[in-house]
Image 1 (tube, each protein chain N blue to C red):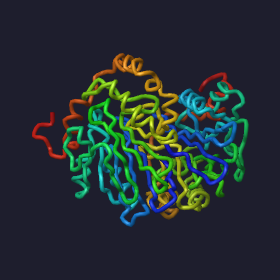
Image 2 (tube, each protein chain N blue to C red):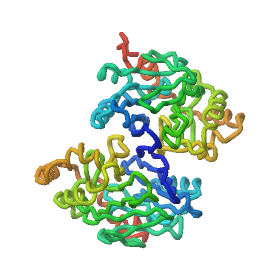
Image 3 (spheres, each protein chain N blue to C red):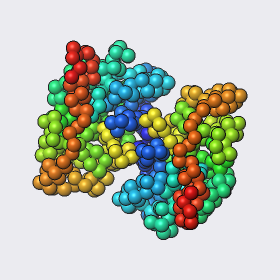
Image 4 (cartoon, rainbow over the protein chains, first blue to last red):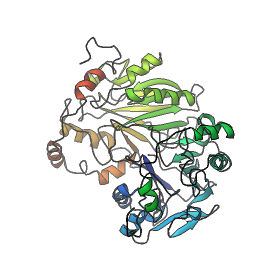
Length: 255
Length: 255
């Protein structure tokens, strides 16, 4: 949940953080409500909550342009395919490096715009090879403070596992320290998941209090290799589906 | 979760929305971080998440002054008593009309201040007789847009049940329409619970899309009397405990 950040000039961000309870996934709705069309985008929509999100978008009079993912998720099926079937014209978006199917493929440095508000694409591989972080733009006409949608790269007081999907703790450490911890300290961090009831943090806060990422790299890598997490229970369904936008093209055989 | 609302003059609000998963309760942390002490308050803390909240308060360098409740909850045990034992000096706060024990009793029109930020107390009985809504102050030096912590009076696209704890649907309807729907349309609505993954709404949004409160009063009363909700499973533990700040004084016999 959040407020509509007030920006000094034309663009006016409407922002909603939405939670899917079973996989503890956050979906983010952003729109520029000063633009006549009220163009909007969703980050990391979940198939189970697509109807809820579409109803909210309709009630708020928004026009959904993009359904984006921060990466190929292993713990839930993405809603991008469903959104496309229910709202023809919506474009599914993911990083090129993910190797997944989508309408639009993003490369580091690309910008995704809705009205006068834009998101900057930063490559943050490590949890998976294709992970990106979407960061709101710099400048007085963009939301203040800035917002970073970090997917599973940075979680509040934690980070994504690095033992699946071409994960690499070495690479994750480099990604976070070069692409996220270099943002202004007051930049809000909005992760793809939270399991403790938190909803937002800041770059400064994670640089001070994140129990893993504040360590030196070697210690971090040791921590990550000793997590002993269980096998991700949905991975065998979620990854194949999410490689095709969550059944955008219904595969002949589910799994 | 949310951003630190930027206000034009001295006070600077730090705001965190925190979720307790079992009872789907939102706890709210507010602090004035432009004040040297960084004074803070918690609204509707839950006993199960007191340690989480205290750790965050410590990490952010805040000084907890008040642990407040919007009403005597029936679905979880409040954390105010526990907070007092763990942080001597913290004052528990509730409405006088609740009939509950606490350090400070609030009446309609009272103001609760932390630094230069204050909350205004509005009586919003109907879910229970003692329900209040806390609303951030009016004026350029207060957070913009304003924020209303409505407890169970207004939920996102819903409202609290009115069949227990001296509830009255007639009274709830009057409370909401006179005390909450009269606030500016962009006022953010932060409820005590949500079961659908929403986190925030606005007065304007609920006045347009709330399926119950947008009806006329007679229709509303009919809806509320036909909800057929199950018996509140925690009420026999929660209400007795919450009448004493969640075991502020350990009762001789639990229930």
